[in-house]
Image 1 (cartoon, one colour):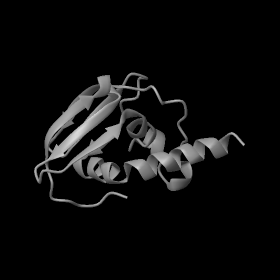
Image 2: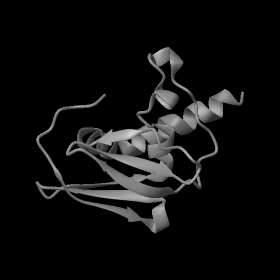
Image 3: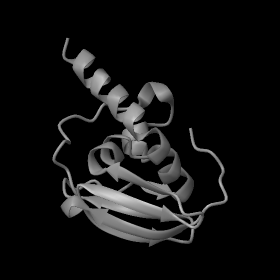
Image 4: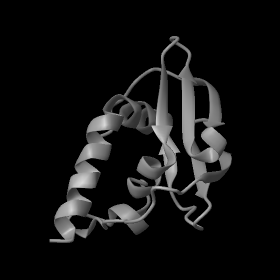
Length: 118
């Protein structure tokens, strides 16, 4: 769930040859997110659907990379991935939230993938 924060990014930088994203905020905090998590949890309707029941399980994205970043107004960034996905718009609040919950979100995703194959 997205939370309202009053932080603005001061730096967005691709790391590990596009396999990750580092975001620094104006309060001095930073988050690092893997491209895999950003891809499989994309806020796009293509991934999230229009309700929780419609959310798609995106698999086999361990090696995905972010190929391009584009500003969306002053509130977000569009990430383009090397697998062609480019419809997710990531607000600063969403990136901060995902950064705070990165490890738990990635573990939950891996568990969903593992249980899907059973």
